[in-house]
Length: 229
Image (cartoon, rainbow, N blue to C red; front, side, top):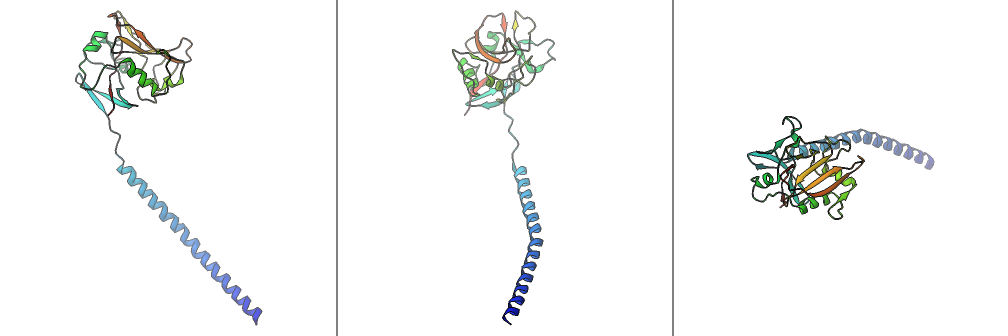
């Protein structure tokens, strides 16, 4: 009788276990489906509540120029193409190059309060924020320089533009000649020097140099900067 009772008890326990397992197998997919639905709904709500990125601009000479914050600075990220200056070829080709200005024209641009024609230190700060290392105001053959340059128009070495500065190789003009583009991106500095990003002669790396070229014979591109709040 004791053995029979044990067998009956075992069979009853086995039946209960199978029943419980069956119920669990039915409930588990329903639970997972409910969890997925909840997660999807939550994700959708988060996406709907996410604000669109704010487009920041600055008004200069009647035109809005896009800007971006890079480190501790806010920069215009397209070349100035306001009144005066020299166009690239017909003006309809490569509008991203903007216009080319003499130093006197650059200083005469009416910019909003807080903005300025960049100093040499402004450009050094910009480049250092991307990992560029200077020695005597020169930075040669450094991969980090690509973070400042555009992904198009460079003759040999395309940039990554990770910084958003987007320096195009617009070149420069001497004595109002047609600019030769492709390997140099050069901008006026507040003291009459220029900030120049160049492809090396080997076409394998970029370098950054500063030049003293405030002769009225030269024309370069313009960018503007202000301190980030």
